[in-house]
Image 1 (tube, one colour):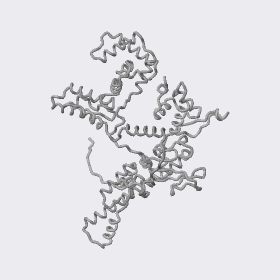
Image 2: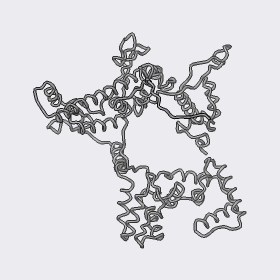
Image 3: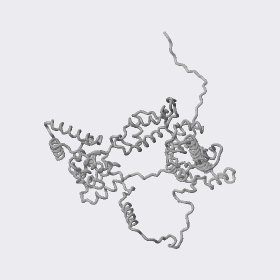
Length: 529
């Protein structure tokens, strides 16, 4: 019988591990932040660490130098005559300002202002408040309205809920206080009083008839539905909507549907708003500010100079890359803390060990924080220089010439890890003469291209450098723009064939995918019928 025993054995082993310091972790965290988050982090750190001092913040204090205001009003007064056209333009502009919704006002505030003007009982007011604050950003119910009834209040019941819902649905903006899109559109159509019988029928649970929105297809679907309804022996006609739908179906079977009526119904439905509360928001509007500026300057240089943030162009110019500090406050170590810390180190002043540790730790923490800010700026600027060099054709000729580029390629060029580039590109923006772009825009996958034999007679198909995904999307947008006035809109297959003639071989499915990313509808949706 074999004997299996347990015994302790002592062995020597050598293991190499790498642990990140707290400063390294913080530096990578700050690298991934956008300018707004970093700004908040700076103020948070300054509030926590008395040795970190904010010396200037242009977003809070404005421009450093302000032109001196004259004491004479005439220096800033221009006298002239106003034309009739100028008065009309001024009135139109004033109307626009007065009718524009206040972006700072929430949907709930807007509805409550109207709701509180209505004479209601305390129970009805409480229920209405619960219903209003249960609406999402689109104006639809988040929870089922019946769940908002207060069980402790016997006055709140289904009848009261129905009354409150009808009141809220009559408030501005029209279409809020509904369960879903179909109910909202139907309510908007009913409230206008201009909806045709056909439009109300389509909106009453038959929105699928509009896919695709082609007149002949809609007529066929409605007629098929009418035939199916005719074959049903038992009809539920308990409410007014059901009876109205049944009568409309009977009318269809007798007279048919004129194409003109369908076109009018389509035109009316397009005037309705699927997002009735879109002009109201509970979130503060954030404006995108560039983190990197790329400016073309006339300067003769022999080669790229990343130390001076310059990339040589092919036409005697250079691209100068600059980091934007406009949205970030300037920080430094407090001179008082530095001087006090030096005196403590030299022994000129004797303080308790706890106070000495606090001052020393605060100064060291402030220095480390500033070092992390400098690391972030240096990494973003250096990576931007490498991106400009890799995408030189883009910066010289435009978006059509964006080349395939991986984050790994930039990481190898500047000697950092690929994850560092990913953090660097997160929520950062670059401004150049072609516009404002997310830095991630410049990292794009490759699409293989071929050179057609018709472009090089007798040479056969020859491989060409791969095109980027964004360049192909640009080509698709240009093709659709060129054929925008065509009566018959281009299908995805036809777009694929046109791209093939230009040397870009992609499948119809890929064209559909890129077209969707460009927010361009299919040929059915782009057809005006």
